[in-house]
Image (cartoon, rainbow, N blue to C red):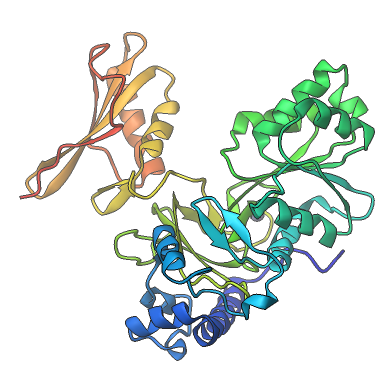
Length: 420
Ligand SMILES: [Zn+2]
């Protein structure tokens, strides 16, 4: 099934491709989806004003909350569907609750492109462990497996004992679902006496919808020989980023849509390494969402990947908008502070304190340590050096506080700044 393959474009080709796609979808949405037109008219922007990936900043971000309100005001889909409703093949209910008119064919295609990394095709038997009830996720993956010419086994959620037997009895080669559920199923299979490597034909797993810890990835790959792929998407948009064999972040799916990382307050695009909201314009002609604010925080890397592709890569999900705090103009999320401290096993508890001195932010990382640190200066130096690699901004100092000084229930970033 060669038509579904990730296309490698040079940065110039990519820019040209995205500009063309955006011009097309924005014009299409403006002409066919009444609310898309209304929103553009409200800011005085015409489709002809949007020529490039940068121009799209002129358009407002539509948040999930706003989409929900618009759907209530203007049932069913808030005026965002760009085809006559009788042409819709499916209607879904997304968490939120939101109704979703997302086109299964289009969403299946973006996933099929991701699956091409595993050379999925005839002879593959794939369990799809996502729910087939109401929610869209299971159906997209189902469609993707069919598009690749493989056999899909819709097992849905739950029933891990039976799922474990199914892996063996049907000679399953691929798994789609959450990583934690695969872990549960494989443990059941082992308890039933199967040797995963010897008795099962399982060779790959595609995961989405939750954090995929590096330790679990290592376990699947090294202990069981299962190749893994992490991906990211939302019920409203489909799957829009997934990792390649180099696993250095999740490549943007250019075929699925245009991804921006923006300042949640201003909607302006941010550069590589800066933390902001993931905002997506999808290329679904049935249900085009222009600058949809996912509420998820991330950052991206844009140096060329070893796989040869130039698409930027999302660097993990860093929490939700609202939890991040701006320090010297850059959003820092509590999870990033956690990531810094995880690098130093001697640190048992931590809290980042923000103060103001004159017109400057002062950033102090307070830590508790599990034992007396012999060379404190060295530890402080190492932490201060590592801090901006994860958080982009620098911390001013590190301070060891007595055991118990940092409360168990705490804000990881304590903002004591006074703005006067
Ligand atoms: Zn890559």
